[in-house]
Image (cartoon, rainbow over all chains, first blue to last red; front, side, top):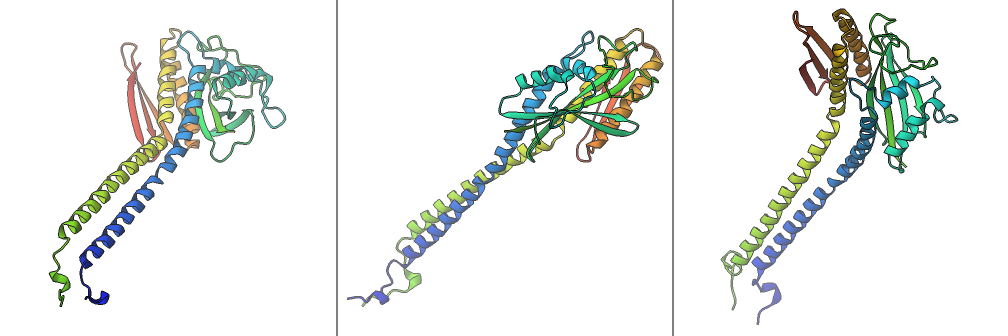
Length: 189
Length: 134
């Protein structure tokens, strides 16, 4: 007859079981902690997807060669200087740009468009398409558009709208009228 | 009378060893998995923060416009240089606003029509320069 308190059989087995259990719990916790790393990547995927929508749309609109000017350049030149806001979402002169962007960007994505240009060492920003106030997780892409003076050798078939407020950057010293950064802010609705 | 000391107990040694080995293998695999996830996360983040589009747009607009001006037979060398100077000033201002520095160096060859245009970009972390013959 053996008293239970005096029984020394199976002590190593008990210890082994305990150690193995602790090690396995530690390993499972480690793996679970690792799995949370996938979360930021999904956010970055969403950002990258929005950037792709914007960049692809701009890439299509800015196709040009030596003989032809891009649609985007024509839109920028034809802008009549009317800024967009909560009451006027887009100027009539940029309706075609808005329609093109609506076709190229999915329905569940909204966007605003701004024109930015340098003048006298500072940057001037003009909102031209307004579809709402972008949330914090919105994404911004841009495309550069170079405009030449209207009567220079480089003007091509571009006609700058007489009410366009983008100024001649150097007052006729060079052929350059201005470089416009067309900036598009995109977000999911 | 049963009398055994703890350290003399030899039963179950193989079971203990195999349990330990299995646990170590699980930990090793989880470390590998963790490293793989970390590296993919860091790669995605680096891709996200790299100013790829800023550099691409700078180089494509600069070379495209320089080629267009240079191909125009009615444009003189002085007009080309003045236009590219102003082009750089405007680009500098636009890029400075987003915390990036750009520079253009235009070198005209004395004979012939080829012009060398070097573009430089820096945002404090990423530096990029490229020279193109137009």
